[in-house]
Length: 141
Image (cartoon, rainbow, N blue to C red; front, side, top):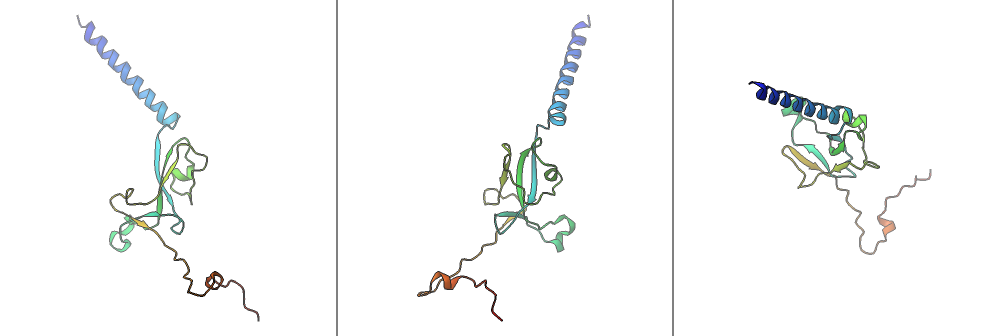
């Protein structure tokens, strides 16, 4: 008489156990998930993100170091990326890796872009490009 509900309950428990085992295998064994991390960024070379805060006002929660965002599959991520200690990380040779640099479209709340623009030398009329270049030779003594 109670065979129907008991069989249904056993079926549901087996189904849930299978789902948990599959997810465990995907996440823990295969590392089949996306890691979204921040790495250091060279503001003279790229457009970097910076937190929009003040260390004096916000205290320890405010980190004003420039960073770039990295999306990578966990099985391809180096350990330094998982620990947030990579210096100038590159996606070379990694198919599932992408680096996001700062732009108006990629900004999130609490972030600003940090860009250092290096001005080009101004060449005056009548002067050559050699005159505008910086003299790197040491003076003779």
